[in-house]
Amino acid sequence: MTTFANQLKSEIARIAKKEARAETHQLKKASAQYRSDIAALKRHIGALEATVKKLQKGQPKPVLKVEEEPATALRFRAGGFATLRKKLDLSAEQMGKLIGVSAQSVYHWEAEKSRPRASQLPAIAAARKLAKKEAWAKLGL
Image 1 (spheres, one colour):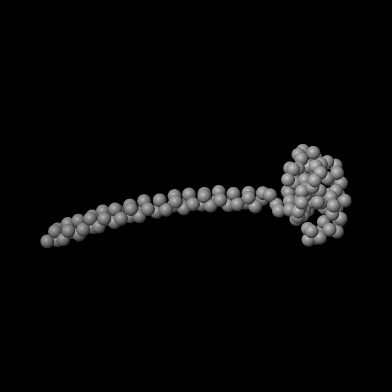
Image 2: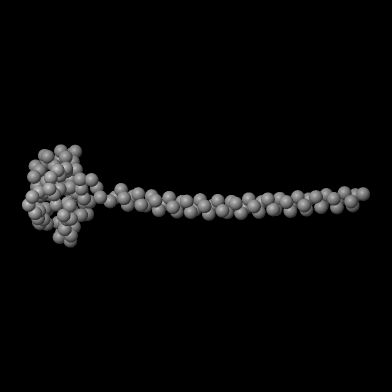
């Protein structure tokens, strides 16, 4: 009778292990799928955060309000712009904030590596009409 009992116990243990293996296999498969889904979501979030950062870095809002378009054609001279910035005693970053561009744009304009867009010329013209105190007040300095 002992042999029969031992065989029954071993058969029950074998069947239980087989069932447990089947259950754990499904759980392992689901766990691997969840990990891959989480990794895909993390990549997607990273891409979205990079896009948001790029958009925030983009075009700053100008401090100067330009109400009307001038009737005469506006001109730009790099030397005159540099002189204006020095006259107002502003850094390139502050000047950029005042007219709504980046500091790098200001540096490029002054070095004659690039020219401002036509849409930016009215803000530059408005900055020409400001006194030093007015410019500093608009920037909140």
